[in-house]
Length: 348
Length: 292
Image 1 (cartoon, rainbow over the protein chains, first blue to last red):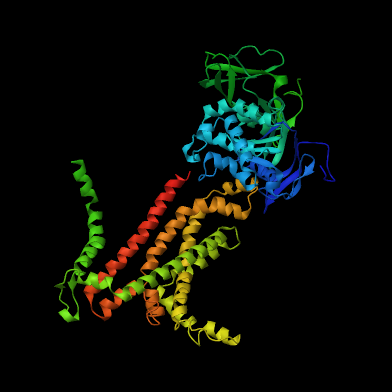
Image 2 (image 1 turned 90 degrees about the horizontal axis):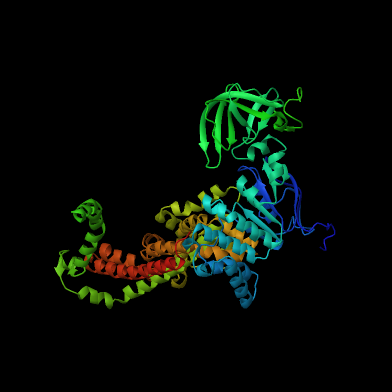
């Protein structure tokens, strides 16, 4: 707080953060803020710059330009150890030759903490993460979930001013991942520090994060709550990246219409189209039954196949697919930018 | 039936092993109980354990044992230290790293006799480059190859120069198996370069260090060609190795029986040392558990 350029904001701030390697721009002019106690997810496909951003914040890679501030103080040029940052690596980066206990205590030993204090901290975090029985085991003797807990414990015991997680769930099986999401969210929120969570999994981002930053080619596409990104995407990329099954895109000249599968309604072919609605006709190609809902894949000549999410299967094979015009998203066909207003400006 | 078939499938390999290792060893064991020299007209004559007693009372054998151990201990430890240093250096992201790696392997690729001749010239007194340099600096010449207290060190130097690349290569392979995020995790915890080396690199490199020690120890204890060309065992037998002594008995004194006894004697010493190293290795790898 003694820094001359101190601002009032207490969390993590990125200002025009960039990283370039040769001709490649890995992170391009990224600016965002994460408040204390807030979980921000960096979401995007592989190679979008989300992990690069995390490494910049941690201090593992040098910043090309821009500023990183934590607690109002610039940490852009500080070495990793002085940033008080804890990071959970995708591989967990547990030391294979050390027991769980030593994995957790190594950092404190390196910082010269007293033995009694180390033991107290260890007992506390091992109890919190339910790892007491594993404390003497080596990482190789642990299950995937236990390893993840050790990695989290090691980050917690650091008492960091900032929490970074790099795809911490990607090595777990799908069911465990679903079960852990809420638990992890509670744990991360309890630290009271800014949390940056990197993932390529939209479910994880939506289920865990308070806000999501969608990245593509190192650039921020949109930043907002999961609901905002889903209902009000800034461009076609965000619209297609979020949502499962993914959004339907159909051509309308130099426009593209984005139709969420749950927006579409099925009717018998040739049914009258209600006022303010638009419709296409097509053949049912196949159905995916999800238990509570059904995805019908309807082939519409000239428009490709539309996915329709409904609660009940429609029995007929020739179908009408229709939607309220005002609720279709409109994108510029070339640039993919979102255009305001409803689907058909001439008749709206 | 099953067991019978297993043996049948292993038979070719077993036969090869027997022919290459077991048969010569058994032959030598037999030969060590025979006198076969010029005195017997080069015909084997059974003499029981006499040559083993001779070995026990042979001062030159014990002196050569000491010299061989001294040479091995000095050169292997030096090579491990330098090899580790070179491996750590070549593991860094330097520009032209692959070229450096290739260059660093050259001494190892050179035939020992060729490099030993080279070193004999380098150590030459007074015309070798080192002594020329010393003369230019106004210092006295160094009797590298004629002073018993210095010559064995010269041999260690030449051996270290040649085999450090081998150790470095092995250790470099080991370094490349250590994931870089372990170092990043340690750096986030505040580890200095030295702490990372001691807490992460060395423990994870231990299996590779021990394999390198094992390989190099086996080679150094049987050193022959380097000594033969560089010093011929001199001065005053001060650099003579066990292998060289056995060679002299067979090829110069034509005492094949005693040469066989000598070889078996040094084989026993080698077995003892390498066996200990292997035990230490197994013990430490069990201690470490599976790496990941």
